[in-house]
Amino acid sequence: MTLMDDYKNMYNELKDKKRTTELKNEMQLKYNELFKLSEKLFDKIYEKDCNKNDLLIIEKMISMKLQKDKGDITKLNADKAIGETLCDVYVKPILKNKK
Image (cartoon, rainbow, N blue to C red; front, side, top):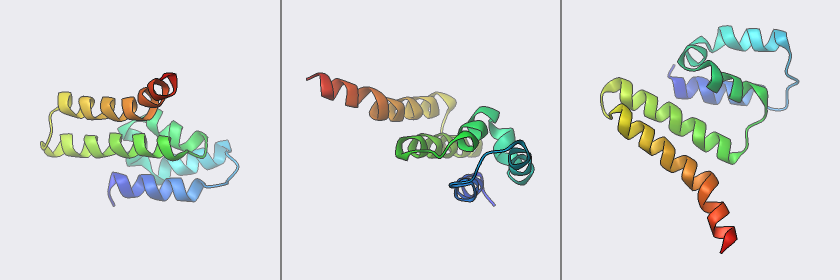
């Protein structure tokens, strides 16, 4: 199972569930690779039902991590791609509304 599969499965498993300490511990064990990749990312997925923008950013981060690990992309280019996604999601809509 890939990190992207883990993320999608965890996201679907958590939909509309009440978050508890026991559930978080269970998710940490079940999706340990995702937890080891980034505890902060794991917490973001766990803490709330993610919106469309959250999902886009999380998927981009995981995708860039996988590409970087395979040597298909440098860390700098991965960081740039994530930065572009963040700009598209957060900055551009603000600038558009100011016009």
